[in-house]
Image (tube, rainbow, N blue to C red):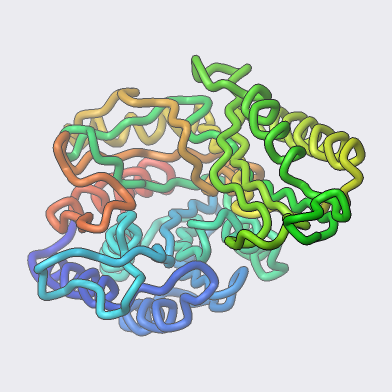
Length: 385
């Protein structure tokens, strides 16, 4: 278990990281700070540059056994923090407002314990993943050739989720987080003088027609296997002027489904509707995909292991608030391992994630670490003596 000295060190490190947030794909300083903090713990190996700025610390017993991976995220958000805390963000327009700085401490805390009480068999991987917020990080890490050397049998993560009682953990087997994809539809025609719009090709009518039919592809509702939701998040036509009839238009739509297979279908439907509208109005059409998140599906055995660990520790748990419409790219680790995501409460009235006044509650660090330690011992046996 953690010592008081460990907790003080982890709290200071968390607040140091909080001051210097870096957004997806830019986590070089954060990764360096993590490597510097891991080095005194003497893991078997520290891997860097995984899928971008990813860092993995390997604690290898040298004995045959399963590989257990614990994942945390390096990246912050492009949101201005509002806070009076002395550790508030020092970088304008960026902030650790999703709890990732705290998630990293769950892994660092486990590292402190493993440095003193090594695993008896198998390996533990502390995976500090880049670019979770835009959905690209987990895919990049898993696709990195170096990841083959640490491919896990089991994978676990904890994400802070306000709205739940303090230290209560929500989890379940099956769907935890929906798949989602940001689809940008670009329509191109030809500008004209506003006095002679017939001389151009305006996308305005196509955009107007597309908004309701895109919405109709998915109306939300019950979060079951048939769940589909399309949210038009941004629309732009032409320029803010009175003298030019528009020649281009853009629609941003977020697509959500309960499973990855359903995402392929709804994305195909959206593209078909846009292609038909473009042809009808004499427009060219282009598509770009952003924030592409796989569904996060909990394995039954991994969920049972995590639940047993929490029950052993007396940590309250259940399936409150699950599944969620929001997305999380941890599901990618479940493609090759038995994986489970846990959602930990900081309090029912705690500030919501992505809010400018959110800050991770440091008192939860020992709770998250204890869960990861118990899972480790339950899979890999008691510490080496």
